[in-house]
Amino acid sequence: MLKIFELIGRYFILMGKVFSRPEKASIYRRRIIYEMESLGLDSIGLTAIISVFIGAVITLQMCINLDSPFIPRSLVGYATRETMILEFSSTVVALILAGKVGSSIASEIGTMRITEQIDALEIMGVNSASYLILPKIVAGVVFFPFLTILSILIGILGGWMIAYLTGIMIPADYVEGLLMDFRPYSITYSLIKTAVFAYIITSISAFYGYYAKGNSLEVGAASTRAVVVSSVVIMIFNLMLTQILLI
Amino acid sequence: MIRAEHIVKSFEGRTVLDDVSVEFETGKTNLIIGRSGSGKTVLLKSLVGLHEVDSGRVMYDDVDFTALGFRERKAIRKDIGMIFQGGALLDSSSVEENVKLPLDLFTSQSEAEKLERVNFCLQRVRLENVNHLYPAELSGGMIKRVAIARAIVLNPKYLFCDEPNSGLDPQTSIVIDNLIHEITREYNITTIINTHDMNSVMEIGEKIVYIHQGRKWWEGTKDEILYADNRELNDFVFASAMAKRAKDAAVSGR
Ligand SMILES: Nc1ncnc2c1ncn2[C@@H]1O[C@H](COP(=O)(O)OP(=O)(O)O)[C@@H](O)[C@H]1O
Ligand SMILES: [Mg+2]
Image (cartoon, rainbow over all chains, first blue to last red; front, side, top):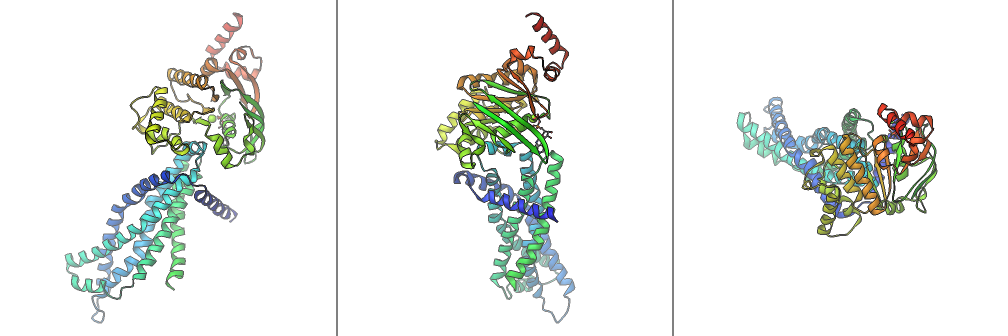
């Protein structure tokens, strides 16, 4: 138990370092663009593939399970939209990205630690925590919401495609459901969640990498731990944010 | 001049440096020698503030480095170049970007001026046409040269080298040693080199400190080391048969 408090304490000390004494703005600009590319753009493919399949499966499931004359068919479109917006495109995508982006951040920074690249930055008088971690956090918090929007759109498209291709329901009913009872606030809620999850993934993974020591085995272990811990923290925050934002 | 005064450093209760005091001279190549695990790297990192010492002081000329805060240290760090054991080049940056980084951080020169300086330093370590390669594409010797170029790009007053020729073949080692030695002379730098390479000791050991189990056991010059009667030191320095013969020849020829 004491260990957990110590860990959390160290995490906040590191965050203090990340947000204090930043380096020149011009240096960050370049690094943020670089990180957006490596953390964000490179995740578009994975997000799109998973979203199109999930959208299709949700639609299929709804068609099969809501097969009753009392329930209008358009409800399937509505349900697909709401599932994508409320949970899948924020929370599930975040969990997937925790695996992909989180492990890459932790192993990149961990390797820099054990090969003394972080010491080399420190010796140049660079605030290494800020120089390495801040651009990743900013890139994640700015870019992941776009991934969420993309995932919502592609998921909904996936549902429509399955309706169209299999004929399990009339695509026009699906579209009617999509337009039913739409609350823009759901999108806001989803994007706020994503931004918070992006912060959790990038900062926790960076934390485990930054304090890695020893050899490549331990960098591997740190990167696994980063993924596990960010995933659990995401689930906890998902619950809390839903409480705060929707009720 | 850099002076360590009664430095003590321990990790989790284990004392790694035990009351080390030593002075490193300006314009000379000062060597810290000792077995692996004796505390050389920890001493070097304590001198530059990468490790905080438990007690004792580190003086840079007349400034007590240990007493300074982050901002004041940054001013001194501008004058420090360091070459790490594995080179520690940033993997995600090209050779040119690696060498240019200190200029980006500390100067407001134009891009053209910076590039000119970068190329000058790369030529100084005899590297050409590698500007756009990445560390993964370089040989061990080239990595060390780029690391040297990066370390001298801001004209440092102090140069720290952690085992600059570990992992290099003997010939390349000598080239790197000589390069560091030349640069030290040329710019009157206070250079401190960690090594357990006896070639380096005999070639460039203008001042030598022998560390054993975290304590200073001996100090002197490369000429004095041949005649030193410290047993631990002799066991370490003259571990190989060839070195023993060289010593015997030197001593009997006196
Ligand atoms: N960050 C650290 N935490 C704990 N122990 C360390 C750390 N750095 C070095 N040590 C220990 O200090 C001792 C000296 O290490 P080091 O200075 O690296 O030796 P070397 O002379 O080979 O450079 C070793 O026993 C090492 O295990
Ligand atoms: Mg060492």
